[in-house]
Length: 326
Image (tube, rainbow, N blue to C red):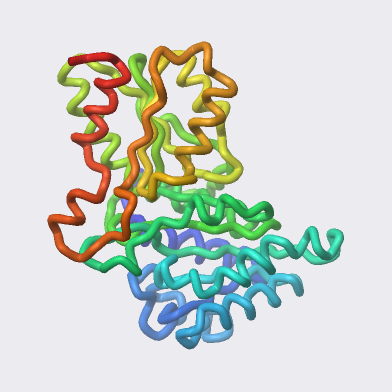
């Protein structure tokens, strides 16, 4: 199977869906003439033209509102945010319009739209450009939330998101765009709402998503040297949450560590912890441990970034704690 970069997988998904459906179009800052801030939309303007690859002003609330209105009238916009940190300005349209439109209109108006772009920290970008938004959006009924970690999932899930009749928030990562991964040549679409067992193990379950999957994998490699077999689950979809896959794994391993790049209060880890104790309490041999960022804004200094972010060492220690290994 061929290997391509994650940015190329996202581009292929958009190109294939735009060729398949004339109602699909892309809009956002620098997506056309500049080929995208991260070159995700490179070459798309030449193929699809300026009516379907649309450069917007630096006005997230404005162009998100235009896209929502377009979706209500039957087309399928893909809105690229240069970063989800900028999407804060568009939350009124995402949360109060897109998410609620079907309910408020008694089913008369749907909103088939994809809001996509990178989330989370990406080095020395400062406190206002280093936040993760999956749990923010997952808190809103009416939105589906996807967060990808590799090219294969990126293409298959983005195609599913574009075809979905509900608004979908699609989270990427700036530090993953150049990552290589196997992607089939032919057509495939992955189901929204199904987690993936990335690594099979018997001693502990590690649940994660997006770029924290790399941290989980690195920790699992080190744990294997000590004879500890970790099972890693990539959530892929945050809402709807595939709790069944997590529970089945916990029933086998009896231990759970959750790894998430988010502040520790009221996040995805919290929801998973609650549901696991509800559906698999009798199978747990140790308390659930969640590994998150520090409960502060992320500052610019490299030493503070290192202290703030989850890392393999913390995961290894958490696993040994739930296994009561000294």
